[in-house]
Amino acid sequence: MSNLRDKIKARRFVITAEIVPPLSAGPTKLLHEAQHLKGKVDAINITDAAAGKTSISSFAAAALLVANGHEPVLQVTCRDRNRIALCGDLIGAAAQGVENLLILRGDDPKGGDQPDAKPVFDLESADLLKVARDMRDKGELPSARKIDSPPKFFIGAADVPRRPDAKWSPVPLQKKIEAGADFIQTQFGFDLEVVRAYAERLRAEGMTEKRGIIIGVGPIRSAKSARWMNENLFGVSVPEPIIARLEAASDQAAEGRRVCAELITGLKQIPGVAGAHVMAPAQGTD
Figure 1 (tube, rainbow, N blue to C red):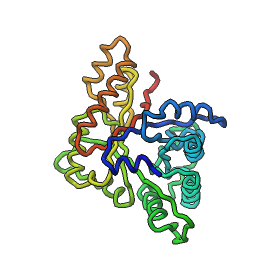
Figure 2: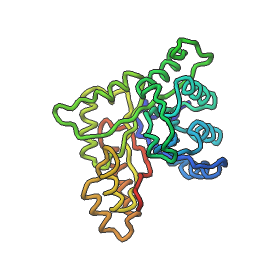
Figure 3: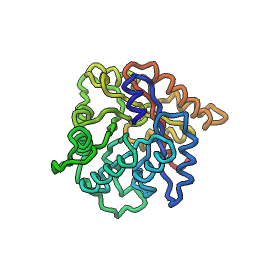
């Protein structure tokens, strides 16, 4: 049973955190990281070859977490597999006790460790959201072939928090919700006023009533890292007051952790926000 689903439905503020699986045939490092998070978070996201870099597969890593008493959120990208493989992997994950999914398009492999790899993209993220929903609700594959013992997925999608102007409408997010998303995990939201405006617009559109919106946060190691993120990560804006705090701190990494904790406290006060998703930010060469 998905503890994450139960808490979101009960409108309890949730904390999720992300692990990037190691490039190792041994599970020790992965399980050590997961154990460090035990009791601190409600679920642990397992990335799927993040940034196009090979690692333990997210499916295998999620199964290892379940076997060791953790609740994973299995990240699944459309980049590397066609619909036959994706459906088989989803069924396999469910058979291992994995219920939480985060469906993503996937990073371009050109930025990864094997840039000549050919992306697949047989399905886009909205397509795969619908496939996962139909596997759960209808007990069938896209071919209409019936599934013995359908999975009990709790399905997530991604979004980018932004300050909406008068003309902005969350059409892409609405399409993901219509396709089957039960919850949303976002890119980093370091500016609470932007998050507040974003959540207010989603509430006005009726999109937070039944779907949990979980906002991305993370500990920034330094002011240099913050500036790198502003310049290189799509949709990310670290406000200047946070950068100034980091610059003034004698221990910038410790200050970054304090800022992250303060952001989580602030998110709890914003109507329409269901939780915080803690990620270790990509931080350039710092």
